[in-house]
Image 1 (cartoon, rainbow, N blue to C red):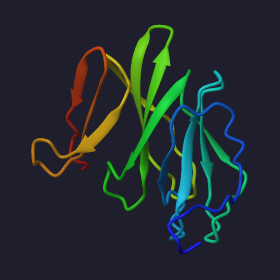
Image 2: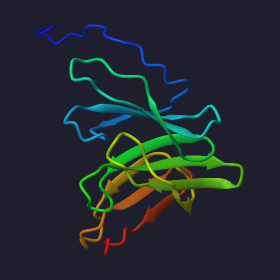
Image 3: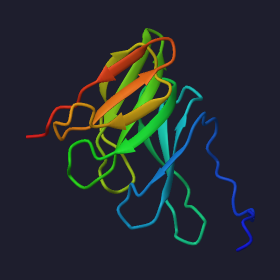
Length: 149
């Protein structure tokens, strides 16, 4: 409202997100809302922004059992945002790297076992030009990225 206050706009049907993040995952220049669905369906929900403060119904991408946190970055340097999703599985904690398709969906997960999946931080920790990830609550796991070929 121009006065530093909020005006209610829209409720998004995100089922049971434990976290959300934002980014332009469909490449249209408008911010989208990305939320993991932790109901056991194993999906990432992308609510595409219209640009007026409203969002479309979600696009769904499979990510694996019980996703809890998601971080966005362009890991393979193709100009599209990718998702790094923290999943709790029946066998332990897992980070799933999913390359963005540029249309609001994500590809097949590449899985990495870690100590825990909350929170997720991304940066180039070893200054090699590839993005790295760190996560941890009960222990800290650092994953060093590989430069794409």
